[in-house]
Amino acid sequence: MSRGVLMYAHNNPEIDYFKIACANALMIKKNLQVPVTLVTDDGSVNWGKEALTEELVNQCFENIIIIKKNYKFKNEKNFNDTSFNNKSLQFYNCNHWEAYKLTPYDETLFIDCDYLIMSSALSNCWNSRNDIMINHKIYSPIDQVTPYSKNIDDMGIKLYWATVIYFRKSPLAKHLFYLVQHIQENYRYYKDLYYFSSGMFRNDHAFSIAIHMMNGFNEFESVVKELPIPGLLMSWDVNDIHSVDYNNLILYVEKPKVPGTYILSRIKNTDVHIMNKWAINRYADKLISLYKD
Amino acid sequence: MSRGYLILAQNSESTDYIRMAYALALSIKGTQSEVNKVAIATDDIIPEKYKHAFDHIVPIPWMDHAKNSEWKIENTWKFYYMTPFDETVVLDADMLFPTDISYWWEVLAMKDVWVTDKPRTFRGEIITSTKYRQVHVANNLPHFYIAFFYFKKCDLASELFKLTELIFNNWERFYYDYLDETRPKFNSGDVAYALAIKLLGIENECFDTNSIPTFVHMKSALQNIDQKLIEEDWTKSIPTYFTEDCKFKIGNYEQYLPFHYQIKEWLTDDMISKLERKIGV
Image (cartoon, rainbow over the protein chains, first blue to last red):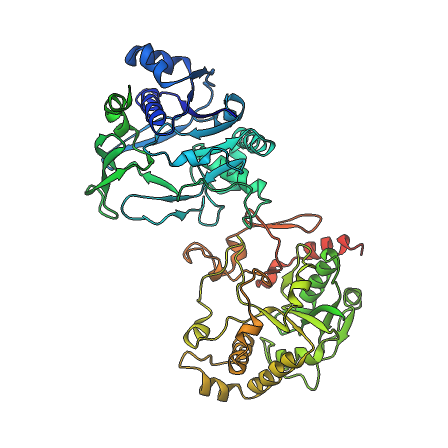
């Protein structure tokens, strides 16, 4: 049984996802000791090789799969860099449903490149009896420390986070990813049906709808199971990074209800989803130097 | 042992409960593979076109204690004396059955009386709101929901119904003696039965930790949704999709459990036509 991590990285004019993916790939190798495959596009990989050297890129990834971007796909997203700065940029995320086809592994951990792997916790996924594992529980560093679930909308369905998905090549996983493809291709319809306030395509929403459909449009028993972690630790995009060290990261966490004021929070030996991409970009070089051989 | 569902339905000035009981009976006939006998207890005239849906039409015993009432709960202590079945599930009229729950009966038969205490939201979550349960909480009463409960003809049930009769006929006295200042200013079936169970000390015999029996209770305040976001009439906030074969979704949630819609206008003539077609009427 082959095992590995799959990540996507498509740069936009300001966020260097490729570099973030490189940093995280090195973290994955240290903590999970599995190969990493990157799905990217020509522009991103060429820029990455130029900026980081081909040798480093090859050290990060066993496979690089270059796909053709669909330039008709427009998906504006508001990228926050703390509460003080934000910018609307393109967010290319319409191809995650292809992960099932593209992965070279029998067992895949499909991870967003900004979900920094600072522990071996996800190693517990391997050889799972579950075909798919995905979390609906999240928590955050200082205010909501007990894992909790959210709904897509106040009257809507349960929100699953496509940040980390474990799947095994299986009919169930294949079905899930094909359903996500269908939802992505008919997103305007599903957006209205499931009352999304924003028109931006989110894989979290597409996977949530697909799981809801596979569950028989209810939640008595889910066909997908939770990952073997209490929940996904989320650092929202209003937070910033103070400093990084080996499996050790200190965040400026914005105080709840007091925007612009922060508490320092140390994250140690715990995986964390850094939503502030600018912040990771600022520390990507440091992360690479910490984790490369 | 005969098994069946009992619906007490008495029309009021504003509400046609017989019509709702008819729709419920149609849904039971259309979905239940094993237990699908339905008895209606009423003193009202049942339209000829509705009669086929009921296996038993039972007059209300003794006199109609709800004659001048709008809420029509005054006869609800008489279930034990109305039912033609050995084992009965009592239902509120404003309910529909979307799926087959016949298998519940073998579980229910393990107790003499089995009461729903954990109804669910349309999303299937256990209702956590105690908005309408202040009396129960303050007085440590069991959360008795009259809309779906099971009993068999037996000593325990007989005793429960006798005490409930006593409470119904002297409710002001009982509420004054046994409930604190949160006591309701009107009689309530859920409170009276809960008090009877508590006074008899049979809570453990009438409730269990099982996930059944249960039903979806559509009172808007019970949906685990911020009250600012949902109207008191839930049908104005959450859409319904009712298919030709009488499956239905509330919002994006397919309904599988007995469904207590509570807003009488939710049940349309179109739904009744579909329910009729499903059983070949």
